[in-house]
Length: 79
Image (cartoon, rainbow, N blue to C red; front, side, top):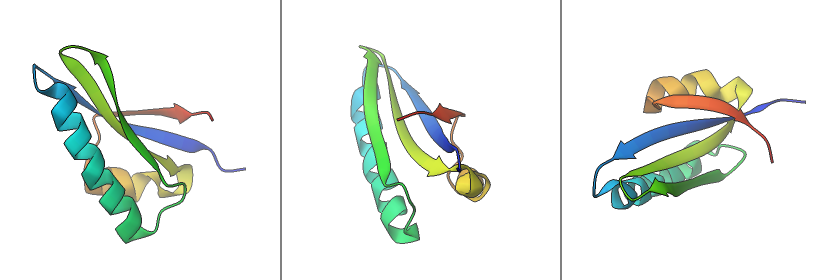
């Protein structure tokens, strides 16, 4: 079974949540345009000045997506 990787973009500052929400919209567009599976993306506030945007990709697709979108970090994703 292929592992899933969560690619993460970090945003800091008073507008972090709004920026993360906006970035998530672009991630959703990218997932659709590249027909990626799974179709998982989102955003999450960590605190009032720190939020993340993320997308989940299969490990076999991680390198090309990473090189195209330049996430700040990644971790193994579990459902």
